[in-house]
Image (cartoon, rainbow, N blue to C red; front, top):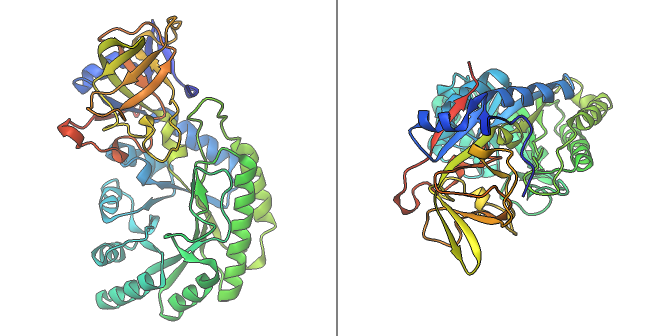
Length: 409
């Protein structure tokens, strides 16, 4: 299985999350399953990233990674902006106290009512097509507001080694690079406030050199497009792409190397970008490793010589750990027994399965855990991103998992 993220310890064999024992957190939540997010680890991650990045680079939170309201309130004070993908996320960002001027809205299928709500709020729309631009300009004219519009570019390159490629070929996202300048010119000529470029080449990359290369290509592309427009962009959103180590053999990114290389790229940037700000749009990298999913063992059984631990959670809460969220080959997330954290493993491996009536509901295959018994607490790590909000919580009528933010005093 993958490596347990740094920052977790135990006291008398009990896993500590945010300095508190897992069993006590479960009692406070009223039972299992429960997602627990450690605010202290999130603060540490943001601080380390800011220390590595050039001063000209802002940090935006892609809230699709985790929109839990207390976590959003935390991120509102730690980051420079929020990136949203729906009017529902807009409402949550506003409830967290983020003003419209600090929010950008991407997504290829924005409805007219979503565009209207965003324009009223002063949100920057990252335009995904010429048709969306036409609709946004017409809605702004009807409302009597000056729209804040950026152009999302489908780049002619991809982030090599990324888990999800967002550029380099035919994509539903953004405007192809060879048409992006013309659209930006149209936006400017229409009297809109042009906010610049949004260029996202891929996500979940663990190759620092690939990220460095993609960022350099992104800056060069933004410069070429800006020269073609004949205007300097206020902001160039460089996208994200920073991955986290989920699986065995994965190694964490060296953000100091990435930050130093980005600094050199920006020092050499063309004159048309001299006064531009830059931003990184990160979600998973900021919050994934701070989250733990706790679920209790209901039964331990043998079948054809294989040992199964059946828990009261499953893929309806933590779909990604089951291997059914964007992975081709199922691999184990880091997992441990929270109530015997650090204890030596038993001789025989155990497979952890959920409570759902589907063979897809497997949370860990043949892992080395201490001898598992009913009542034990299983901890699945890397649960801070694309967990509760990206899982089919209504499947088979089970209740959603409780969520908690700890260490935010």
